[in-house]
Length: 270
Image 1 (tube, rainbow, N blue to C red):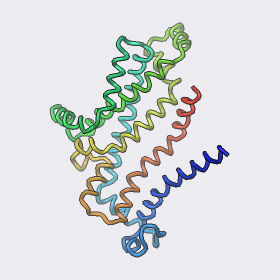
Image 2: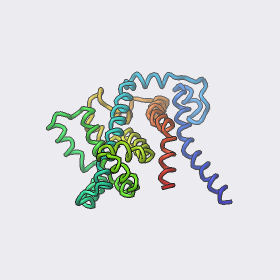
Image 3: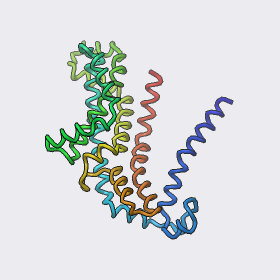
């Protein structure tokens, strides 16, 4: 009985998540005339890719897609590396004052982006990085690494001391122990962090909207928001923009869902 309740709960949740996506996909491949005549829930007749092509060309979506991939991928990789190095020092190295350092990281995670926007705008202007992808990569690497450090420190604090002692006896230095022992053993957890950091950065809108004002540097969410604000799109083009905006994140999640599942399972077993 309990198993059936859980199963039906999962089915209901899946339907609730997939129905909006299906409606968006249906309207993205309709013509404006078909949408006006039959409404948003009808099956497309005929199937048309004109809205997708028009939106792609109107916003130069290929460039926005590349910008989002470069920024999100760079942040995910750099934030994981920084998090591991910090957590290795705090969790295994047990540096002095680690508790207060973790408190600082925790407080940094609770600050709203609205409170950071002016200082970040001023600083990026002063160092000549305003309206560059580098500025967004640096800022979100720091933001995501603060959370990663806080999370990984507790994980590495319980790292098997026998493995560390064996590496030390074999003559491994601290750097070799990190690269050849700690990172391979922690790979499932690091994979989960990488997936989350990529998707979180991909969905960021507020700070990229303030810091990336030129058309050549905008990301996918910023481009979608700016174009929606201009009220230049009909319902089918709006559906096309929503579909193209969410599709890369869905594909990325499906590609890395095995790594995510292994990370969650490893955490549960541990």
